[in-house]
Length: 85
Image (cartoon, rainbow, N blue to C red; front, top):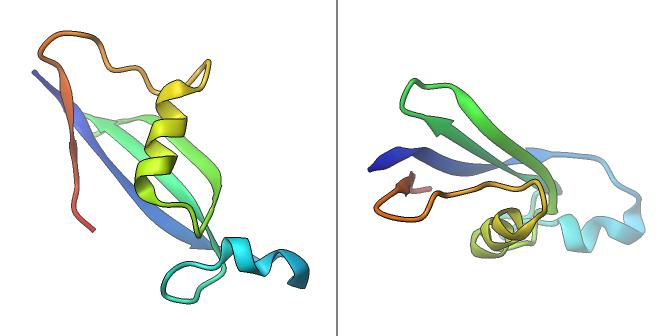
């Protein structure tokens, strides 16, 4: 029932000084979260970018699942493997 895997990463960005706080990661980088989902054929099927670096992975995933055109997981015994950081 495994549909593929998902993982997140940070991409460093430049933002105005006043906004740096919310984009700062726990390691001090100024970045955005990028979530990538791949299928069993090693093809990207979903990519989301835009959450501030300070956003927790669980919040990003919850947001992506609840968006109108977000990631869809079929009901039943289907799942995605979450890769460790």
